[in-house]
Image 1 (spheres, rainbow over the protein chains, first blue to last red):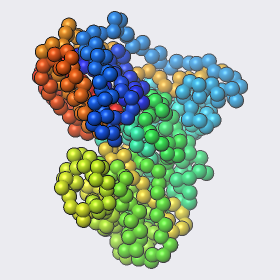
Image 2 (tube, helix red, strand yellow):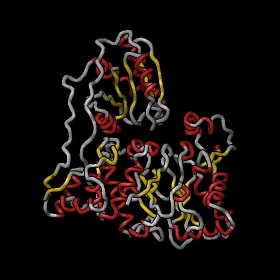
Image 3 (spheres, rainbow over the protein chains, first blue to last red):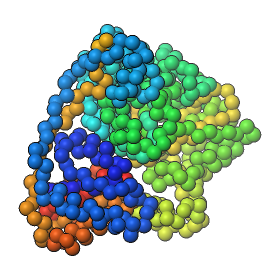
Length: 418
Length: 92
């Protein structure tokens, strides 16, 4: 049936990419000046009026020559500058860089990288939206080389690529949303120590090669194979620094509880990645509390936020407890689930704290939680206590972190092969 | 130096756009709201103006379950069965 897509000019590149991915490069997209959200309906009607004739024309005529999509060449090679400094400029011009220097993915380097995974180079790992790019083992290896990864990192990257393409992760939306989210890779199991993936001090910061290159490799895969280019199909309003690289290991040795992988049904011998579409970490400073209740009060107060996606969309907010905070909580005899339950009960936002217009919107999206709710009612940070994820990571110090997520997404855990 | 392509191929096959009607007079317009703020207002304003200026028929509206969730195939079939042309919205 003849269809016309309407949108705003700011989001035109994304609409075009969607049309192309669906095999319809000439699907008519008619735009009005951005924004239409957050303005009066009357103002929307004023923006609509000038495009009506264009919409009518697009509904009744098709572009004279519907284009065919050229099949992309497999294993295409490109001639790049030999000079390493010139190469850095060139790779950015191609739209394949992230702004940091990139290792040239020569055939020889990619061959060495592929030795890290005992899988056929042309095996299709996943199709990555929005472009529906074919993430073959070789193509993932190309991006891993560019990120500075070593062959032994490749199985972790491949497991992460498989994880983000589980339908419940909602990668299409994660890749293209205005929300600042990026897949945080949490590594569990023996591989973390073997590869030197930092779980301790500064685990979410700089300084550990494995964290940096594994996180960066996934980002380059998503950008290049998936085709989520910043400012084009990747519509993030701000993004966040974790979009360069976002990877840590759980500090299993310092945790008083079972690690995330065991919680999700894997064994101690399994190594796993868990991906969650995460905002940047927000610190929870509590140097005073010596009780579980005290730590709970501070974590809950930091997590209960008016402007987070989880408050109205649900999903799984993540709490990264520092080992010292975790020890204080566990010393009271609390299990991890006890803490999650208590946090769900405690981390709530009084309805009266939301802006009335925003509340109206929440009430249409999640009526059970917000419709006709009295000002003194309390909105929890997740739909259920089990939706709150808790891991233990970090080094010495009285800090934890809360990490809200995109909301319309679920975390996914996959075993790392090999 | 030669480098390998980091983007690679896609699995997209070209498809034909649906045939267009000659004229819009009397046709039922479907609206598929993508659940973004004011998308319905924009789509309804355009549909209303089409009726005034091009004499289209009735308007029927559907909404995606969420901004980041696709419409179910059954809903798309329903729209195709009930309407002659459709207006939908993309992104914010």
